[in-house]
Length: 378
Image 1 (cartoon, helix red, strand yellow):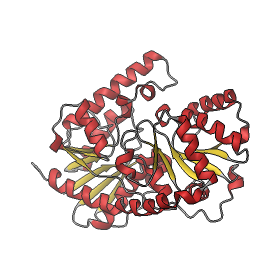
Image 2: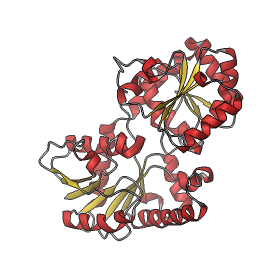
Image 3: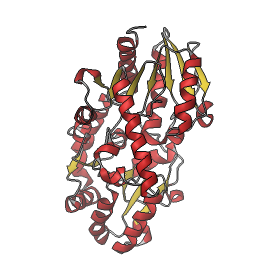
């Protein structure tokens, strides 16, 4: 069987966070376990050389087409046809409407549908945004209904798909993401990042559903009691960063109380995880949630919201809070700063919890899905 993988998101820098890592780890581990099937890996210029394949049954194909673009709809189907694959795996919902090659799709979340705040988070005017959102609905409807099968990264995401689209439960297989231990961060100077211990860390983008406004408000009484402590927000600088800066100024927090680290490299992120007093993950909605598991890998305690998939993924290895309860968030942050020994049991459970999320398992289960559903009607 000849399998195509739309790997244009390959890598955390090009693909952005969890989706880029998902694509990279999936391709890497499929190559390690499958020498029987042929694979064509579709890549962009930015990540073509970053993706290194060594097996003769894996070939790379340059398709330098931006995602969510008209070119994606027009050019990608032609490239897929030229590659003569039996079926495609699209790791995201942006499946070209006019592609006639059978496909499987991975759905990570339905945040744009389920969270109106993030669905309307845009710098574009209302008309342009409305047109783009209508296009999104058309494309995701196509991906859901025309797919031969759907992979959901959590049971929560599966239930969200069933709620919003008319599909049968048996069309969806849940395959949890994997997680790797972060870099050891040796040689990284926190001071070079503008960070000084002790600090509470939050990792990820700054879209409204990440709920960082509530986290910042919760940090106000923490800083009042511990003026040497800081809140560190590691992620991409964007328009939402500027909104958070305005909130920080309005709350009267000094500049050193909340530090922004723009797109930390892997070794920098590893150092940030390992030296943090607590990883805060206050999201209102997530499809999976990799940062808390990465923190658990290195023994950093986790405070997470109790919303969406997070109890499913984190189990008994995190302290859960209501995403609207800034008072409880402040209490947990103070505990981590003042009495870290009290969180020892949680840290030990975290070490056990992360053993359930392995990329080689993800690749094995995904390959089984290919063989089960990709072979039909070939």
